[in-house]
Length: 66
Image (cartoon, rainbow, N blue to C red; front, side, top):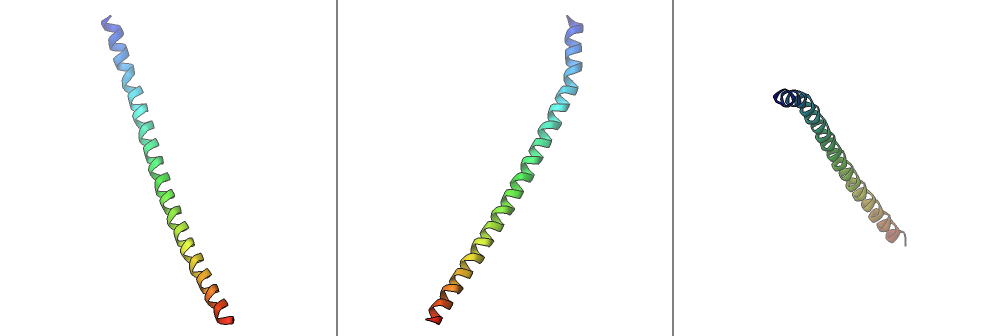
């Protein structure tokens, strides 16, 4: 019985190490995805501001042309 418990404990250490490494990689990947998503949102916002300014300038030009 003691031998079985010792064997299980000895084999559980590498399994725990593998799982810990997996969770660390998964967390790093999620972090990178979050950073990329934030950068994408910044670009979308900049694009929106540029398009809005362009439309405002076009409207001003149309008012002047009348």
